[in-house]
Image (cartoon, rainbow, N blue to C red; front, side, top):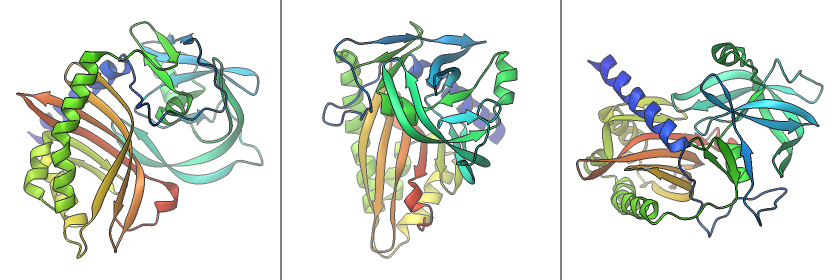
Length: 305
């Protein structure tokens, strides 16, 4: 029964991830993304190619064209087959993130002097490099790297799978989308309050029964396991932990909302800060959290959690 539940949750997440990829990105006006090179007077569109059914975009790295898989639920990576190690690269343990979870891997961190997509150029990037041959073989094409959520945010890109383009510039606001996001945010307000009060009962009501919670300490599947983890690590401390979140990007399809955010957890005993992605959906007139994926900022790697 548990395996069937996990498969059901994975299928739901996969379907929602694909749908959200095709939706417009909402970036709050008070917190625009930072760009190294910007020219958004006119919205620019860069065509997406396909490797089998996977979206791929052509970027320029050191004046050489490279094919990068587009994945808004993953961290950016380079393929070791396309980016040979040099004296500046260094071995390190990295957390590789995708919608299925976070896993640790040995990788080389490579310095990329310039990476350009359309009229956007990012400079002096440090990106982990691993062997992506399995992905290339699966789609039957060339994959030089993964353009993940971190670089997508920095470039201010909207991915539109329906039109098969990567679009720069702020999309026009859809009143229906704004209403859905506002409704979700209002429903989720009690969830952050429940965390700050140490109220595990109310917090459990915020979670879908098939919740997938990815944390720096591991993955917790199901509402009960997630609440147990949170209660044990945060609600038992002498000084109550306070959670704060700063939303960066949101998108919605139907009654599903994807949110990217920075978070901080503070008390006298701990201080944690990181980045998260959350998928919420509305079912039977009730909003719940279907997926949460959180990572720590590098400086907090040794913090207690």
